[in-house]
Length: 200
Image (cartoon, rainbow, N blue to C red; front, side, top):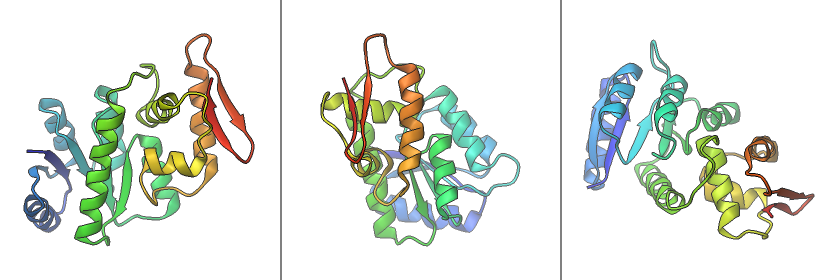
């Protein structure tokens, strides 16, 4: 059974989400604080982490970074009342795979979780330089999957970041710049204005 680690400081939310996730067929572990979530993650890797942002002490962004310091592959999905674009971008920069509003329906949350699991399964089979962050590695793997083909930034968002997660091409440009610095000798990451990015 696919196991989800749910990290949220509000008991009512933990209880209702746990019930919802179990009804959808997932196994669930819960943590009531950010520090407890990191400890549970280190003790046994879940298949996916569902993570709140606003928590006392260690907030969700710090939790995500701590988890990424020990594992860049496990999907992490933020579920937060903070759903402005800047919040979403900050979540992406912290290493999350997706960012879902707490106002989302149960059906939408279930779909986003399953998409994140599918992406993780697809990309985990492919190598990427160890120095890359989770998002950088996933972008690299997408480009590597069809080397020489130019992928538009919208294709990259859809395949790597999740449907509707981000909307600004500048975010991808930043990741591309970071990836270029970490490429193996002989590899090049090409940019074609108005078209996209490709590995050569």
